[in-house]
Every structure is written in C-alpha cells, then in structure tokens.
Length: 464
Image (cartoon, rainbow, N blue to C red; front, side):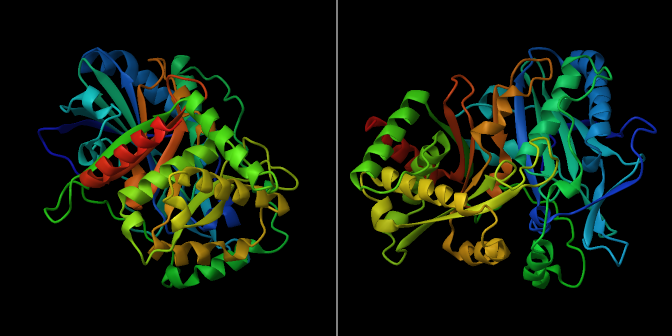
C-alpha cells in the first residue's frame, strides 16, 4: 500500500472468518462468464460516511459490531473468503475453481488518516494518490492461488469514515459485490445479530447453462496469456501520484439531473424518429454514457486527431434477466457480456454529437435482443484488439444503488470506483445521491485533461 507516515497510520489488522462450523469445504467451478476476468485485478470502491466522533468512539462502540457483522455475512458470501485455484480434479470440465473452507478469512485493516475528509469526499478534482491510500491491496499469494477480497476502514477523527473494498473481478460482478456490501451493511445496522441475509445469494453454478461449450472456447482464446500456469495475483501498485515523469492525476465527479436526462432522451428519440429508423433503446444509462463519451474524447484530444477516424466504446451488459432461461437476480458470480459500440469521429465531434453517440449505444443494446450470447467466443479477442484504440470503458451502473449501503451511520456521502484509474479511458456510473433519477459520472484524468472534460461537460449542459 502506498502511504506516507504523516497521512495514513495503520492502527490494527484483523483476519475475519465466517462463524466456526458455518462453511463446509466447498469448490465452485468458474463459468465462462468468470474465466475472462482471471487476468484482471480487483474492482475497488471507497464509501465515505460523515462521522463527527473521535477514533476512540469508533473503536469502542462500532468496530466490534462491524467485525461481527462481517463474519456473519461471510457465512453467506463464503466464496469471497476463499481463493481461485486450478482444479485438482483432472477430469473436471472447469480448469479453475473457487475453493472455500471454514478456516478461510478476509483481511480487514483499520487505519487513521490525516487528510481532509471533506476534500477527499467532494465532487471537485482531487489528488487521486490521496484517495488511493484508502484502498486495501489483495494479499499476495505465493502458491498460485488468487485471494478475492480485502477491506480497509479508515478513520478521519471528528469528521468521517471511509470503507475501502477490493474484490477480484473473477469472483463476481457489481451486482453480486453490491449484494455482499449491502448485506454486510444491513447486518451491521441491525447490531451484528445473526439475522438472515435477504435475499440470500445463490451459489449454484448450474444456473449458468453452457450448451455450446463457451467455457472451453473462451479459455482457448486466452491460453496464450496463461504462460503455462495459473495467473499470478497482480503486484501491489505504486501510488498513482508518485513519479516525476507522470502528470498529476485527479479524480472528479459530474452529475446529470433527472430533468437533464429526460431532456437528452427526448432529443435522442426525436432525432431517431426523423431518420425513420427502427426504435432504439434509450435509457438514462445510454444518454449518460453518450454525454461522457463526447466529453472524454474531447479531453483526450480525439477531436484534433485526423488519423483516428472511429471512436470506440466498451461497456458490460447484465445478462441475468436476458438469458434463456433467466438466471435469478441473486445469483452470485459474474453474469456480464461486453457490448461494443463504434461511431465515426466526425459524428461524435459535431455539436449534437451526444445524440449520435446515444443512437449508436441504443442500437447496440437493441441488437442484444437477437441473442445475448451471440458471438460470445469472439468477445475476448475483440476486447484485446480494441485496447490500442483506447476505447472509453464504463464501470458500474445506476441500477446497483451504491448509495443504499447504510451501516447504521447514514447513507454514504460519496462513493468512488477507484479502479477506473487502472484503465485509461474508463469512467464510472452511479445513481445520483441527492436526486432520484439523476446520474453521477466518475472520471480520473491528468489535471489538464480534466479541465477540458469539465469545460465540455458544462458547455453541453447549457444546450439542454
């Protein structure tokens, strides 16, 4: 973990296990939805909560409940305390699995920070390196297995608390990870009592049917990256703010109100009807992505690049309700497919480029009605081939309701997806905290590019 002695002090470290005897030794095979995430790292979020009390008050009155509620929650979400390993059964169809047992535990760090809580939890551009100190690192494994969860509680005395969460993407998607976080929060809010998780997670991997052998086909695609063995855990990264050769990286949030979103949707649908095209999918997610896409391309200099004729967008689509038969919403694991969008740069840079972008995104989503798994065996190769083009990628979604994670201290003041910094061109989306129907967009960029993004965003709002 990158930290400075004057800003972050580790107060204690705990290993939290499920209650004794509550988790039998279990193995869950990875599905074709999981296997594509083997070579990635964790999804990292930070939840900020106002807490106008000293550290001693938290340690005495709240920490015991936070720990006991985590233990009880891990009883239900036991894969997160386990590890990914190669399957020991040579006859198994799945070459990798999540192994769990009653002796598993999750690292929980307790720290104290001297940075300004209100500065770090704001919307304005902030030094990303300071935020990153609040994120725990997944433990490094020497046996080839992959740890899946790490947690850090950081106290800002008399001002606030942050909870940093790192969950390896191979374990689950945002739907499942937020199910875990909100279940932990509910158990903590109820005083750490042994109350049932509602709804309980579903760990039955047979819910993901694979009649076309997609697991084997996708694994064959990534065979070259396996390097003869299971992928190692990612090494702890240095603080993004360290290094004189790198510009200052900042994180900021931008909001679209419900009225602005409705106005954008209306403009997109009007444009679509004028073109006499078939109906497109037009949602808050679509127009928010389109708005951010235009601003990000401008911030990163795409407008001035004559050689870059096409803009690319990549985002994940939830498949639980789209599969046949549908998978229950509480299924724990990954159930996402990538969605690819291309748009001529000349259209995106027009004054109404947001409308062109929204049309392209809406049509891409509409095509999923032809079959959500169509072309699945080529997904991985297409993602790899797109990386040199630096597509805009999207993490999160307003439907995951990250601001509902109340541990008993009230709703979060701020939630950030810190891991978007690791892939240039990635933004995060969440529901607006203050207004139902609004959307919050998180962006990490060098300072000069953030200034350009902000200017484009503000100019675009004036047109609504």
